[in-house]
Picture 1: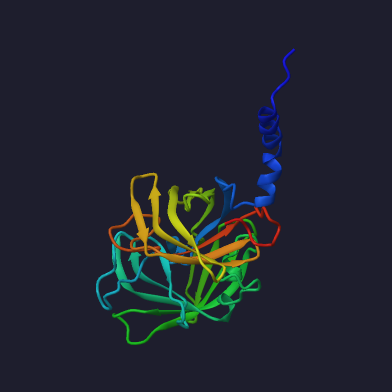
Picture 2: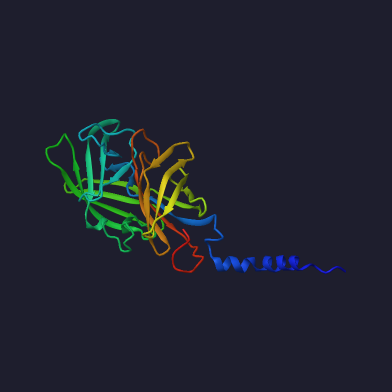
Length: 295
C-alpha cells in the first residue's frame, strides 16, 4: 500500500481546520446571506367606514385635498389623514347624503390627549397598537361652508386587542349620534436581507389591504442606523409605489422608520392618499453576540 505524501497530508489537515479558521476570522471573512426579518408595516392614517345616523343620514370620508377649499377628492376612500404636530391629529373631507341626495359637505377634525398616549415610545399611539386594543374618547369638530360655525362633539373609538377594526360612535353636542366602523391599515411583513448584496425584500400581507412586495437597497451607517434607498412597494395588482431614502433607527433588535410614499397604499385612487407609514422590523440574528443584530 502506498502511503500519502506529505503535501497531501498537509492539504487534509488544512481542510479540516477551515471551519475553525472561519470562526476565528468572523462574519467578515464568511459573509452571511439571506438573513430573516419580520415586523409590521402600518399606516399612520386610520380608515373610517360610512357613518349613519338615526334620521337616515349617511356620511362618507376621503383624504383632504392639498388645495384648501377645493371639491373633495373622489372616489371616497375613508381616510382620516394623519397630521403630525397639529392639535387635530386626524382630518378628513366628508360628504353627507340624505337618501340619494347630497345634503352637505365639509371638513372633520379629530384630536385630543387620548390619541397621543404612547406607553412604549415606539411612535405608534396606544389606540392604534394592534396588541393593545382601543377604548378612547376624542374631540371632534365638523366645519361646513354651508354653516356659520362648527359643530362640536366627541368620538368614541373602541377595538378589541389583537383586532385591526372596531366601532366608532360620534355624539354631537346638539344630540345627534352617528355610528360607524373604523380600522387600522396594517400589514404584516416578513422576508430576507442579503449582507453581501446589501438588498432587502419583504412580503407585506393583510386581510384587508392589497398585498405586495417591498424591496430596497441599504447601507449601514456609522451611527448604528440603516438607510434604505431605491424603496419600491410593488402591489400584487400591478401598482408600483416609491419613496425617497429613509433611515431606520435601531433599538435593541428592532429597527424603525417612517416611510412617506409619493402615492399611497392601498392604491385605489388617482390622487395621493394613505401615504405615511411606519416600518418596524426585528432581526433575531446576532452571530457575534455583541447585542447588535446582523442587519
